[in-house]
Figure 1 (cartoon, one colour):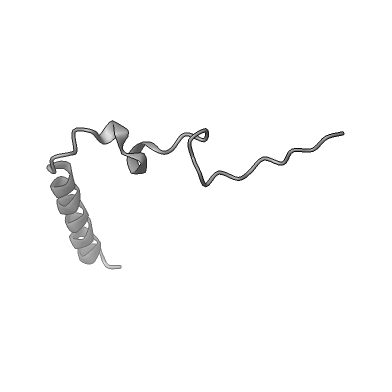
Figure 2 (cartoon, rainbow, N blue to C red; figure 1 turned 120 degrees about the horizontal axis):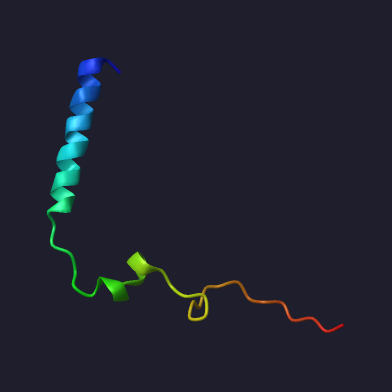
Length: 54
């Protein structure tokens, strides 16, 4: 990339970040599993534990 094209690319990145920073966020984001994750105890897709008796 030449110097002028990398400057133009960085300007586009800065413009996109400013746009995203100005967005209104959802008030209940602390309950959104896509943002906070799912605890391992309530995750239905966690790997099953193997039970073995000696």
